[in-house]
Amino acid sequence: MNDFQAIIRGLDWSVPIQILLSVLPALICITFHECAHGYAALRLGDGTAKRAGRLSLNPIKHIDIIGLVMLAVFHFGWAKPVPVNMNNFSDPKRGMAITAAAGPVANLIICVVALFIYGLLYIPLYNTGFGYYVLETVYITAYLSLTLALFNIIPIPPLDGSKVLYSFVSERAYAKLMYYERYGMIILLALVVVMNRMPIDPLTAASNWVFSRLFLVAEWGFDLVRLFV
Image 1 (cartoon, rainbow, N blue to C red):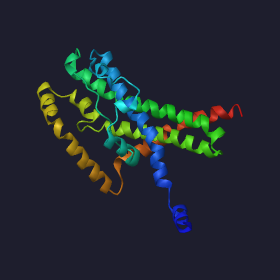
Image 2: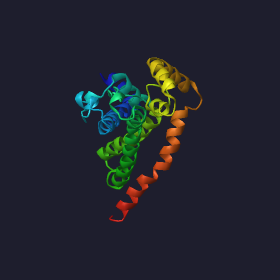
Image 3: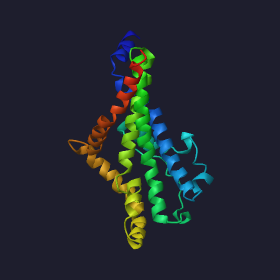
Image 4: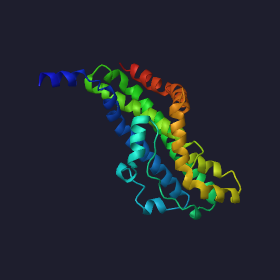
């Protein structure tokens, strides 16, 4: 028994703890991402997502298990796509582009808000036991939300960037691209494998670069709290 306890104490729990801390942020990021798609579509005239019950902040309605695990572990992933009928838009291509862009924009907003909250909470929580986990969760929410936004603007179907790109091509080319969208996931998974084998993951590098610039927002929150302490 003592040997077992010694083994348990000797294990490195940092990785599983980090993954567990990433689950809640991942749920927040994908939920608001998909709700943004559905709400944008509704405002543009398509109520398909609303009828399907996807204008909900209940994360269970949006979870794709594999995509959630990928986001929590590897910091890029996806959710269950929100159903959209582009024929309900007055301008189908433009409507689809705006609806697609709404998801990454929502994630960018979440990132900025989470960073500001992180700055506000840092002084009162950084030196407390439980406070550390709260700060870490907020920080991970900001970072995951940014990576989800950047990952989704890659112009490969079924990612959002492909639908924005399609709005700039001809009707004939658009129809052809939509036909080949079914093969997009295969291409996407191949891209993920290639990126993981590269010396420097371009998505991680881009995320780190943008995140370091946006961290100024956390400093604003930090400076605001310092005025009152």
